[in-house]
Structures are given as C-alpha cells and as structure tokens.
Length: 449
Image (cartoon, rainbow, N blue to C red):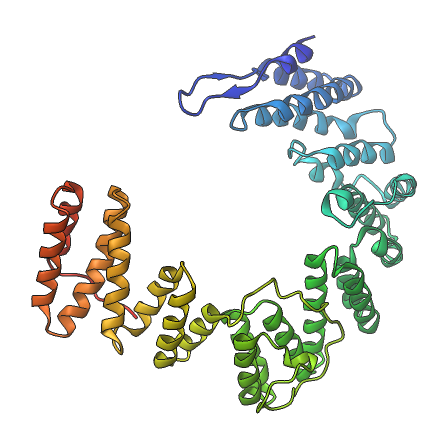
C-alpha cells in the first residue's frame, strides 16, 4: 500500500522558487532492508517488481532534478542484492535482472552488472539464460526501418545475448549471431570489429562494403563509420594510395580545413600532394568532382585509385560554390594573405554574414593588411553598438582593443584618439557604452594572430 501511495504522488521541483513535491521513499528503503536482513528474498523480489513497474511510470511523468530517480534506485539496489538469495533457479535469476536492465530507461539498476558478475553463476546457468534470450530474439518483429528508434531494443537484446554466449563458454556463436543480425538490425560495425579481432580481415572488408551499400541512403551515419573502418584497414595493410583516396572522399563530402589537412597528410605520404592540392582547391571553386571524372581544364588527371565504396552523386550537403569560407580558412592556414583578401572581398559582395568570417580574416591579416583589419573591426563595433545592449557594448570593447593595438603598432595613436572622440560624440547618451570606451582608452593586451 505504501509503494502504491508513494508512486501515485506527483514528483516535481520548481528550480526558480525551490518549491518541491517529492515522494519520500526512506521508509520503503528501511522496510526493504529489514526484509533482506530477515531472509525474505522472494517477498522482496515481489515487492521490488511492483516498485520497479510503478516507479518507472512515476519517473516518466516527474519534473524534479533526479531526486525521485535516486530514491527509487536506492530501494531497487536492495532488491537486486536479494536476487541471488531468492528461490529462483540460477538461470532465472540472471534473466530476472537482464529483463529489467533491458527495460531500464532511467539507469535505476546500475548495480545490476555487479550481481550478474557473481562467480556463483556457472557456465551452465549462462547457457540456459542464453537459450531463453535466443527465443526472445526470434520472437521479435523485424525493425521497420534502419533508424535508431526501431533497432534500439533489438540491439540491446543482442548485446545481452552476446554477453550470455561469452560467459557461457559459447563465444563461437557470437560471430554467427552478428552475421545473421547484421542486415536486420544494421549492427555492421560490431560485426566488423569482431571479425577484425578474429583475424578475418577479408570478411570484415566485405561486410563493410555490404553494410555501406545498404545504409548509405537511409542511415548515412552508419555508412560513414563503415567507410572509416575501410580506411583504417587500408592503413593497417599499408595501402597508402587507398587511404588517400578515402581522405579525398571525406574532403569532397565534407570540405573543411580539417579534412583538407587530413588529405594533405595522406597525399604527402605518397608524393602526390601538389597535384591533389590543385584539384582540391579547384573543386572548392567550381564544385566539379575530379575523383568522379568530372573534367577540370588545365589540371592534372586524378592520381588516386577508386575507394571500395562510393557515396551517391549529390551528397555534398548542398554546398554553394565557390566555397569561399573554406577557401579562406585554407588560405589563412597556408599564410596566403593576398588570396585571403581577394576571397573575402568577393564574399562581402554576396553574403550578409560575411562579418562572421571577417573576424577570422582580420585576426589573420592585421599585420599585412592593417587597413582591412581596422575596417572589419570597426564594422563589428558599429553593428554591436546598434544593438543597444550592455553585453553588446562589452563585446564591441573587445574589437576596439584590437584596433588600438594596430594603431599603436603603426604609430597612429592620433587616429585612435579621434575614433574614441567620434564614438563618444555620436553615442553620448549611451552611459554604459561610455563606460566601456573609458575602459579601452588605455593600454591593451598583446594581439595574437
């Protein structure tokens, strides 16, 4: 009766007023401990099952900060300790815990693994539990889609069946299970990893290719992981040209400074970076894929082999070309500051968000193109002041400090003082801004760039 009353109570806390309505499970925990100490394990399991069922329903509707979850978990920890002392057969004890851990969406049974690790459970016990889990897996409906929500429960059950096989001395069944389930639950990564550990690299490679082809459209995240496994296997086999081909695939699919650097590292290893650099930069300008045979005038032919898997055409995320933002990032990294300026000026004509890139550009070129850096920072200062918010004024002050450093380096402090005077005159009614201007009128920290 007490369990039913407590689980019917609302569980909530108002984080603003700190008012709360929280069920107090301390007496239930005391009674559970008393039952455990008195040796009433079976009764405790019955009561624990009721608390588990009603308590999880309560948590699903609660709005507290985890207090109810913690209180229930403390009670259920005593119930778990009673499992090995109950009259259930050893295999049924294992299944009692596993079934509830499979359904545990709130981490109420974190100590369940400790119970299952008890050496009192023999190989035979685990084999019997595995047989029951096998039947339950066979009785599950096949997932309707490859999406996580549809495969989640099946994969959790597979995970426990694998543990049962391993603890029951039936490790040879693991690969067979994973191969049977790979196309059903799309658990290709686990299968591939197991095959690699078993030294079956060619089978692992074949499953990567098969899994990629079956998931690239509906579950591209899985496909990307399998493509990564293929690259890792190529690296382990010292197939450096193939590794570079996969890095190129990553770059064309997700062009960024990071993927450009990874491509460079792989290409330099086989001595084709100058050619690949030309082709990569041409792709960012035109959107033409040289790895797919799309012709680029006056450029070298594609120097890398075809990867074992390929993404469908048009999977570049709808990126506009020229991709000036990535081109600017690369030009900054390569210290090609004249190119940075050319690209930035072109971006300003066609993008309303050029100011975001402008901050990066200014930090890069303030020594070689100080006037450009000053113009970018001044534009940001004016934009932030126009927001008429104290926080924006503070942010504008940061840009003003950067400007001061450039003026100091060029012996142009008269211009700096004139700028401050102009801002004070124009915005004399903004008291909080004037305080910021007073703060930046002195020295500033060293500019890093």
